[in-house]
Image 1: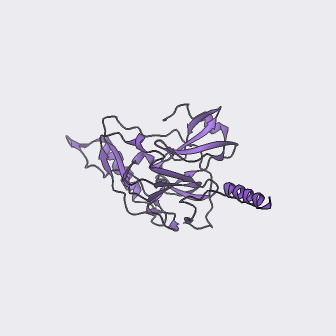
Image 2: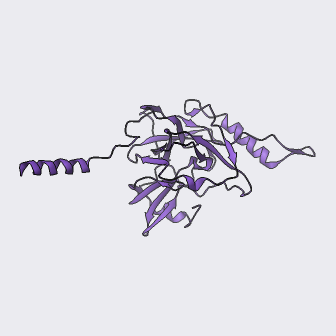
Image 3: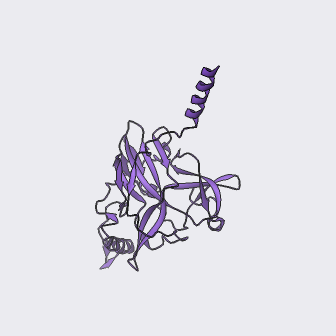
Length: 262
């Protein structure tokens, strides 16, 4: 009887033990002396910098340093009767602002961007992507304001995404801001800390970068101002993380129209 008792106890303890995943042994290095603040609603308007801090092979130590931006190569300026088109002017200003990004916070290299007319976003699922969220780990998210040139250090948490398939996966560039869904009014609702979005034309090709088998992506997601606790998930395509708990001010939820960019 004692044997059966101890056997049952061991099985119970084993089942309660936290399930190990690929992100558990990864340490994110950054200065612990930095003063971090909450990102205000719509703060990202006029700010530059992505939330992607790493792409490549999994390794035990990763330094937090963000990619400047994820965009295709800049187009040559188009001139008509001596005038430059508006898009090229805006894009050039964007590129000029990009040159101001401090090398200590942002990577100098760019990600190779590809284009296709085939829709593939829904092909990303739990069979080829594993998502791990460390919602209790506070890390810095760096952004730079183009007007003031000031670096902002936001409170964020890391999101790890791994290619668990044997194929090279296409990751759309609009995935640079991973999707957050929360439980609100008994529904799973898309939420973000901004109403700002750039919409592309359906006629335009889909731009993406590649993620090789066993490679990982590490993103950061800014914390919301504290409020009621709710259940949440991180999603990319049809792949989703396990459910976790987070705090969010209900006033932020009310500012986002239902169904916004789902």
